[in-house]
Length: 140
Image 1 (cartoon, rainbow, N blue to C red):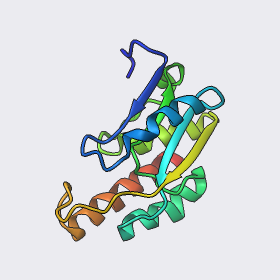
Image 2: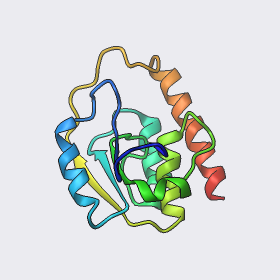
Image 3: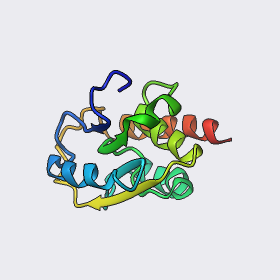
Image 4: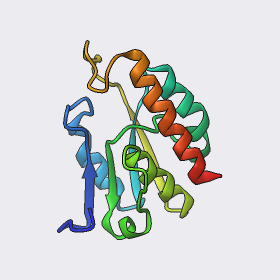
């Protein structure tokens, strides 16, 4: 992200569960905001719902772990993540901690795949809850 050529950066999951058609809207909103975050309006996992009710409520977004975002390049050096696996959520949290203007938009997610990429329900929920605890350490 630090090496990006342009002054607008968009992140999106490679599995295309985030709709690429939202990218122009995200980029357009960067005229007014430092970071634009696209949240699913329905979260499938209990761990994602817990993250939304805790960290998300603090930050002001519904879907902490959505990686469909647009950033102004100028803020990237100031919001460096440290944990690796929570990279996207840490960028969002660090932008909030630095008082950057964040805009959230919501979208209807497509149906979930039958075999999620991070394992079964238990494994996925444990990974997400562990990542949420790491975010709490950054705040507190």
